[in-house]
Amino acid sequence: MRVYCQALVWNVIMQLAPPNIGFSKCKQTFASTRQAILVLALTIGVAAPAPVLAQPTSNTPLQAVLKNPDNLKRARVILALGGGGTRGCAHIGVLRVLEREGIPIDGIVGTSIGAIVGGLYAAGVKPDQIEHRMLNRSLLKAYQTIPIPMRIVLIPVCFIPRILGFNPYDGLYKGNRFRNYLNNAVPETDRQIEALPIPFVAVASNLLDAKPYSIAKGNLGLAIQASSAIPVLRRPVPMNGLLLVDGGLQANLPVKQAKELGGDIVIGIDVDEQFSTVNEKEFRRIGSVGKRVINMVLAKVDEDQRIAADILIQPLVNNISLLSTKTKDARRAIEEGETAAKAALPTIRERLEKVAKLKLADQASEAPDLNDQSQVKSAE
Image (tube, rainbow, N blue to C red; front, side, top):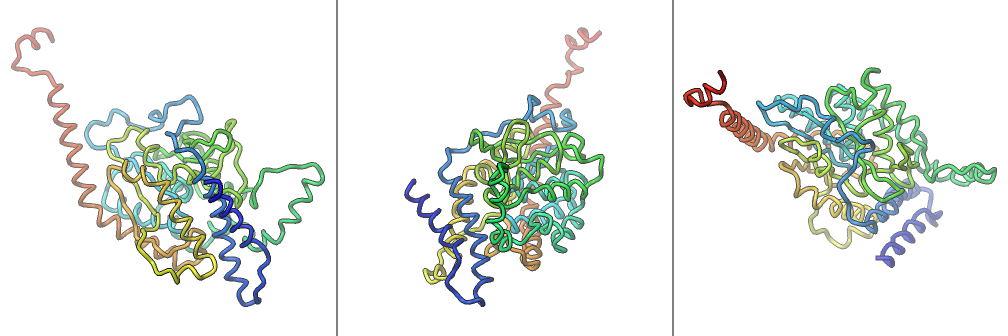
């Protein structure tokens, strides 16, 4: 494993080095650089210990963030929205279908892009509004305040503060502008997680103890910033004595974290690439190996989480890069999310009806029998 990680890191360094190619291929090289950054980040996840169940960032039990805990008339549905960069736009399509079909949503747990889309929706932002922010690129511009290639060129400048004695956390972007963008996108009354109309939890990874953490309280924008802080690309976010980065390293599809909320049905929305055998010629293109490795790592991280889901929705988002800036990719992911959600509707309705019947049966068995004279006498 050590040799494997060293090889990957060396591959990253080689991709970041100034290429000996013509100007016409610079754009392609910069695209591969983005993939290289993610390979380095996710290599950490491969070498890390097996994920453990997330813990709250306070002493408040996670079940306490759910509202209406005594609702016994229907199934309580929790969504687990997975990470996957631009592919995560599929979450918008899934939410749109569930909302249109009247499927109840009693809680949302999200990682990375899942936390971005899920957090906005939990705060009352409609799918159409989230889609607009995705397609007009305002959300992307807030996330990447300076284009990645330009930021890499400016890396030497970033060392100046260190020479002067200031040592910031490692990463190309701070993320403060992104946090402010998210907070400004929701009503002022919904900027604290505890006050959201739909209970929400953002999942991040703590660098200090190498464990995933569920953020169930505090500022919404800060929680999402932490959950989507891709290592190397974004700086870690200090919060409640933790140092948090992207939750995708250990809980990319947070189904087990969603189950901690105590719902009856957990629906996992997995936006990983679905693998098929490809021709070896595919890996002669610059950046092709890094892209494949990233998708393999994410699929492995999500393996146990997929199995744990009561219902799994998997939009077909193959060939959409994690950090794609193409509007057509975002639009296609949204459409695939709608298609996958529609296909899952019969299974969802069947599960809802089954749980509702079980709850009604339990209520009936617990009700006093009025024909039983001993119970009537006791009641008197």
